[in-house]
Image (cartoon, rainbow, N blue to C red; front, side, top):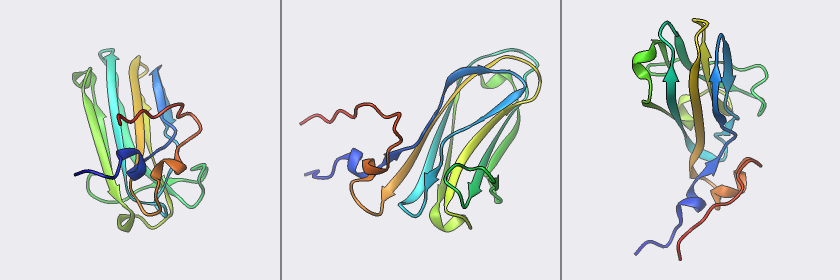
Length: 148
């Protein structure tokens, strides 16, 4: 029998709302890895114009606003050189708290080919250390429905 709800286990960070980017970057809100054991990011691409160049990079920072963030080092901490072959595809990133040297993590998407790319990113803290995890939700979370 399941007694714990997923909303007690995870926290939802500020997303990169679905939008078209062109020769710019967007970054998710931070996930506080002093409150969760891991962070999980889901990147969703929509339409992508031929000639686009996309890079995805995990960031870490000591500040929650990721104002002085640095690139997270390590294998699979980024993906670069993505093209319109990724249109209508999803890519995920996962990082554990013991794999970072700072408290907060986020994910940045950059389009550098001056072409339109539709993208959205969802960011989650997973395995809450202090329950419920949804107490760490970003203010953009309106409702979480749980079937009873």
